[in-house]
Image 1 (tube, rainbow, N blue to C red):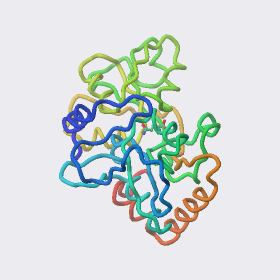
Image 2 (image 1 turned 135 degrees about the horizontal axis):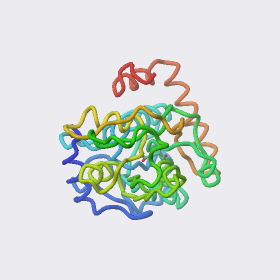
Image 3 (image 1 turned 180 degrees about the vertical axis):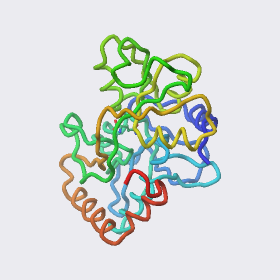
Length: 267
Ligand code: GLN
């Protein structure tokens, strides 16, 4: 099980990432790719993801491969493409640079399709409907909606849509962390008043973690769609990814993966 403390341990173990530096989980095995391999072996699909975003991508210490909705989806797409999927754990703000440097072929990391990112990368068809919500301490009384965040201290994950949105809030003090787990920790220890983060991740974290004293508020700030990112000129892979996604939606495999991680909720 992915837990708050395990997440912290993992973060400590992998030397918190800075831009474009590959963070390898230190446990050996797994499906981590060699970080400096630029030889694009066409039998491989080299995938970049930030493995700290349950239930989309996370490390379960009892299992060697990375777990989550995105992980199952990209492995199923790789199978459709006849390619071996190799997943590298990369800090979120290093994913697009890694794609641009051709160290990876695709990104799947709960990444929202945005106009800004479209300047740099191409996206697959959307594969998941998401959006932003906020988490506050359970005894919080002054924050009920996003409008209440004016002048408040907010934690967000670096390089995310949450960071962009938080910076638009008047007089808010926005603090950026490497992972959502870091943000929740900061909230719990009173370092900030709220965390803005993706709704399914907030819901999963609060429901599944043994973390007490935090709650998700129902107010939604944005509606967002996740896409798989591909290098701008790589139309061949973009097409194969879209075909794979379409096939999995048609043959029921996508629904199975969805039900495994989300049940019938959020559908
Ligand atoms: N969906 C958000 C974004 O794309 C957060 C993604 C993430 O942290 N993995 O910015």
